[in-house]
Length: 95
Image (cartoon, rainbow, N blue to C red; front, side):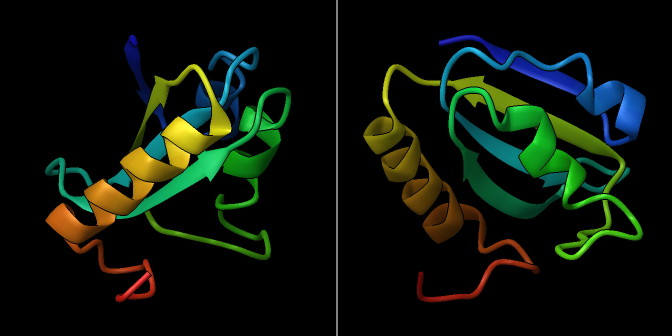
């Protein structure tokens, strides 16, 4: 399914699609993966905003990349594979 990249800001996150589950990556300025997660349909923007400065699950980043999936199960499988491959700094290792 399609990937989309946006600035990791409130306005950038507000432009991302909400209709399907996504696996997302919060990227540094240089494009390195800082964190990978999953968001359920209808909660994509809200979940990503929880990672912005001043929120409970803050993760530093410059861009966010989302990939829509057909199911939450597929998104979780992609999340697990991405974490194993990239070993993002802010993910708990061994997940």
